Length: 342
Image (cartoon, rainbow, N blue to C red):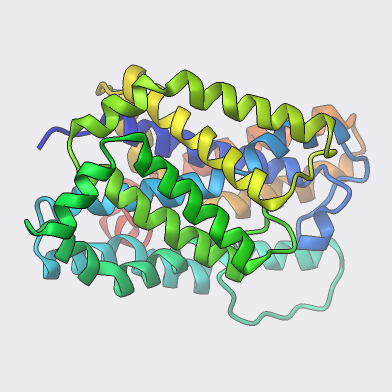
């Protein structure tokens, strides 16, 4: 089976953007409201690019996760799939919940001189918790669709045409209308995030379920997706002050994702040593990044230096801390298991 290096690249890029987005939260006036260490001076200009990312970054990761399941099922039995995903997702999730999340929560409490206390919470690892429940609930559906039956053939034909993408958009709009979230961009530990993630996860599976005709169609329409996404973002910026109605945000989110997948397939589907290194490090960096973000914020924000320089230094500190620790983890077999590495 041919490996799709573009999917690996896009997953790495999405994790990198997640780190950058979380760093940006530390420079927003509401950062402390969601338990981030917040700079004394805000950088309001950051919110525009953050808003562009916010409507698609998490749904995109769920799409890619569903695609990963489809690839895994092509070469694994049910038992092998569940065991492999337990090692890669469930073990890091439990380890992170008990040993990583408490660290950055401790730093937050020390910085704001809050009495030390902790109750188990997934924190930023809620995403892994969602994936665990999706896999447990949905593997019978996926294995049924893997067989040659009328339903499987119908879905393959559907996703060879733009009608498949229209179905995705319709499902996403339906989710927003049904759940009616307070804010489209709030995914963590919400019903909206869980249902939207499940829809994206299932649709990601069907992106791989078919053959190359789906990707040929996606590439053919790539500029339509891109221009549509840009147009809806401009509309959101100028007419809605970045707060478009939920259905419009849902459509914009999907158009960004379709265009990113199309351009990724065209230009990123090639191996490299850099990709191999970063792809293996994506999970450890994701699990660790909040610890180094909080530690860097606690150390740098107290210096009183220029706020833009604080942003640069916190970014450097977070990435160096994560990658430096990854260098240690990748050399110790038992640590590799705890951080989801093979």
